[in-house]
Image (cartoon, rainbow, N blue to C red; front, side, top):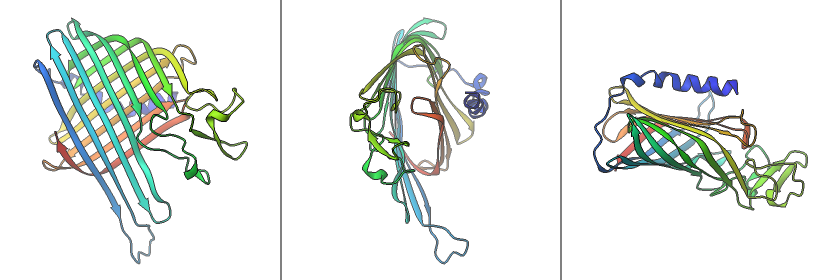
Length: 304
């Protein structure tokens, strides 16, 4: 856990050091909608190249869309994040490099100063099947997929909101539900093969995303904290930070789930930019190690 917190400190320290410089934005009533569609492309080609190399091409499409509503003391903030990426190489063929769908929604009512009473909802899943490429015959046994798993997290709390670009929410009584379908497979290292999770008889072995064999649902109750901060590092260079932390009161509360995403956009012109996304995830129900995803490339951006 110390490694997780140290990594989080390194990734977020630079961005939150600018918090005091965030300007308070004038909020207008009604709907405020804005979003970006991005296509990232990476490509390498070799011919008679003595140093070696393998032709490859990869692409990632993404949507980041906000639709917020303000009326008197009430506010309703929503964000949709979706991305999907593929890469193709001669030896490995086509594989998935990115797959994410996330919806965040928070209703708030002004309490005092910058504080609001709040109720939030977060939903996460992916679009297509994923596989364990470290094992043979992986393509026949999906280890993840659409609603496989799916996470639904919600609860009341208190939100501190300086502006749409600087806010955090604390929810001390948060429900978290994890769902899987009965066609999910996990790799049994003792058997040396994939096993369908729903068909395992031993309830003390081989959990999938924290769900016991034979079950398709897990419930948790805990403390949830989330934060959002977006600012300009310099002209035409922006950084977006999205952070969530969760501790389950009912089981191993010391194991804090972490999900942090940093998006840096270096604008070239109205439509082109160089984009860097770094995401770190720690969830010991999925895998007892820090997960890291990094995507970097030339982006074509369309605002809507």
